[in-house]
Image (cartoon, rainbow, N blue to C red; front, side, top):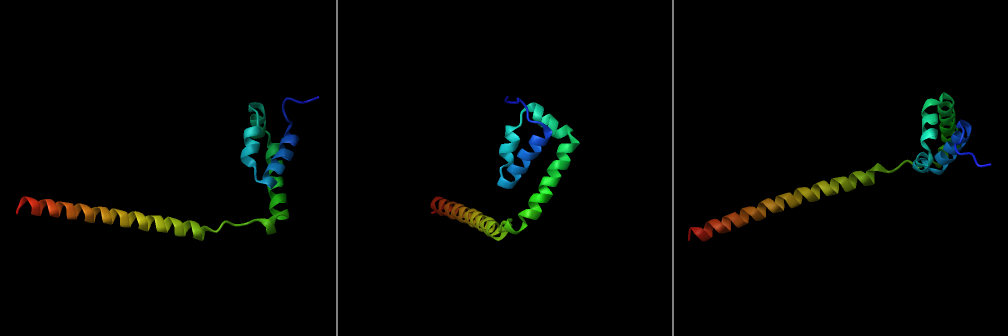
Length: 107
């Protein structure tokens, strides 16, 4: 028969699978209110979750890809430079307009 709520050990197994697959947000969304309370209160689940993290990190350590932050930083730097240039171009255009208006009035 289908159980309405998963028990702590079933939640720990599901957590381990989600951790391996990289789908923790999906696992967390799948929790019912009762299960979420059980996860927060139950020290056994916390220990099991920590064990799952350790097992996964040791078993899949060579497969973990560390993100390359250099590309991100280069893009951020490029956007900053672009915004700075746009701001300077806007100031120069305003100065030219004001200068042209001043010369038009005083001629």
